[in-house]
Length: 366
Image 1: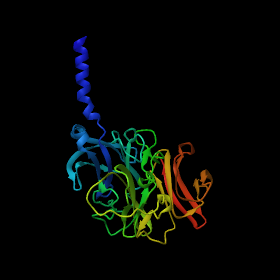
Image 2: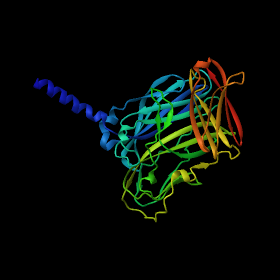
Image 3: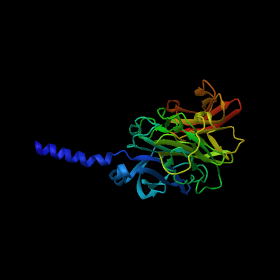
Image 4: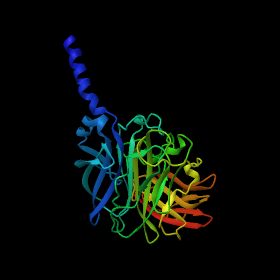
C-alpha cells in the first residue's frame, strides 16, 4: 500500500507543473494563402517564471475555424518579450480551407490563466477566449500587430501603440473592450465576461483610454500588481468591416525608475472616448452576422457610433419576421444569438434598423 501511495504522490508532483497558471493573453491572425485557403496563427503570452514546465508542454492548440470544423495548430516559434524577460510569446500555426466565402469566427479557448489579476477576481478560474472575425468574401489577411507591452511603471504614464506592423492599406479603428468568454461548448460564440473591470476601476483613479494617435494610454497606474486589458481592432474597406481582431494582455505594474506624473480624477472607461482610428466616418452603424453559412445558430453584432435604440429582425424570403429583438434603451453596441434551424434551410435577411436608417445582411442556413 505504501508503494501505491508513493507512486500516486510522484505522479501528482510530475503533473503539477503542467497545470501551472501561466497564460497571460494572446491573439489570432489569419493570413490568406490563396482563394479560401488561410494560414491561422495563434500567439499566446505566457509567464515563464511560474510556468516554465507548462510552457514547454504547450506543443499545440485546438482552434475552431467558425465553419463547424476544428483543427490542431502546432507550436512553431517562441521568443522573450522585449520589456519583460519573464514573459514568453509562443506561436502556433496551421492551414485551413473554407468551402465557401463568408464571415467566420476563428477562436481558441485556453485554461490555466495566471492568478492574482487585480481586475479579474479568481482570474485563474476564467478561461482565456481569443477570437478573430474573418470575412473571406474578399481578398484579405487580418493585420499583423506588434506585441502588446507587459510591464508599466507605478504612477507613470503608460502608452501602447496599436497600429499594425503590416496591413493592406485598409482603414483601422480600435476599441477598449471587456474581456471575452465563450458560451458553453467546444466552439462557443463570444460573450462579455462581466466579472471583469477596467484597470483604472480598481483604485478609482486616473484615465484609461485610446487617444487620437491610436495609442492606448493609462494615466496612470497607482497600485502595483497584475492587470488585464483587451482591445478590438476593426479593419475597414470601402465602409465594410472585413475583419475584427481581439487582443488580450496582462500588464504588470511595478515601482521602478521613471518620471512620476500627477494622477487626474477618475473617469470610467465607458464614459471615455473608447473608439479611435480612421474608420470611415460616414458609416453610422456596422452589422456583422456569423457564421455564414451556418447549420443553426448565428450571432448578430451591431456597433453604432452613437447611442441608439436598435432593432434586429430575421426575415425569411417572404419578408416574414421569424425572429426579432429590440434594445430596451439606447446602446453603442449589442450582440444577439438566434437559432434558425427550426425554420428550415435557405436564405434569410438580417435587418437592423435605428433612427439613422437600416442595414440588411444576407445569411444562409444549410
